[in-house]
Image: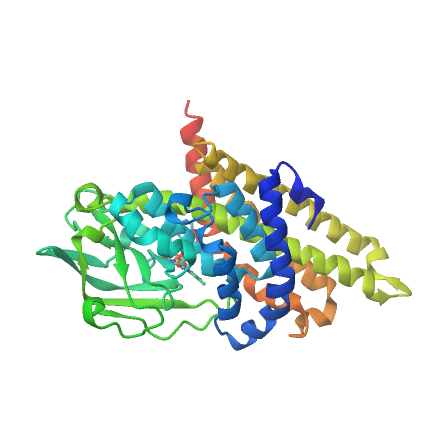
Length: 401
Ligand SMILES: Cc1cc2nc3c(=O)[nH]c(=O)nc-3n(C[C@H](O)[C@H](O)[C@H](O)COP(=O)(O)OP(=O)(O)OC[C@H]3O[C@@H](n4cnc5c(N)ncnc54)[C@H](O)[C@@H]3O)c2cc1C
């Protein structure tokens, strides 16, 4: 691990990060190629993550978790993403579900779900996007209508990470289509489902998971559509309970996206770190014109730029996490972290790819996988364009004349 990563972290954090670092080197990096090529779920790796307690990092001890903060979680995601960003994908939507429950869930909901989520026995997905809607969340069409003590949900969701293997989907649906402003008529439902089942039956009837979407990278972790067709969700499964949570879904989900952005930023830092490691090694092994390519100044400049941008992205990302933990408003910083770290991840991967010459184009080399994985970071949890919109808006709010 780079020395920089040790700065300003506590002894407890160091101990956890060393443990995860070793796990990544021994279990993830040597096996990622296999699961990536087959596009199969890395079950043995996920099982070990459960044993290490990684699904419960941010869940308080009283519910069976480790009770750690966002800053520690961020460090863990940097490490996991250094190994393979799909592994952080397995855990990320779960983390968002945990965050939603801790921030807005009722005590009954916390007691019902968090202990099983802490062990990883139950994993969570997070579903806003639809076939016609991504950035403009207020345009969702999925609706939920009250019928007795249930809500009947109809609609199609898109790009649901962990859409098949999850047991819970935190789903945004329209509950008041007549609301004066669209965002005031949306609710977050905790929809339960059978994990790894395409056609749900019995109490979960009306929820179908079509075959997983074929992707350029980010393999192993499935991204699916979800089709809700007459799915009956108990009113008590509205996040926070019906009384407190009805029509409050939009701000709840936007709050969760803010921590989600720190998480994607951590992924950018992790993949950039790995790209730098690969570039440093390859450039000292490969020779041209009688010397290692690392001795050519043009290559050293690439390495210098990569390391400098990586360090900047890491600091901004950790700052955003630290601020959130300290209870300081950090929407601006989370947007900045997501923007700089995802762009840095993509840039560092591209430079490492160039340094590998023709071999970077071969599936025999790890950088080929990183090259297919990195672009996702520019899209998920809000594109770079959307981050710039968020940053610009917040800047003007904070500096209004
Ligand atoms: C692998 C993968 C996993 C995902 N996982 C999930 C998940 O688990 N849950 C979930 O809900 N979603 C998920 N998503 C969806 C993701 O959040 C969206 O793809 C993303 O928000 C962008 O939405 P879109 O694809 O509809 O693009 P659009 O919103 O259609 O945008 C298209 C382009 O227009 C730009 N654009 C849009 N509006 C503006 C504007 N006002 N000004 C300037 N430019 C603009 C965008 O930046 C982009 O370049 C996932 C996506 C992928 C690819």
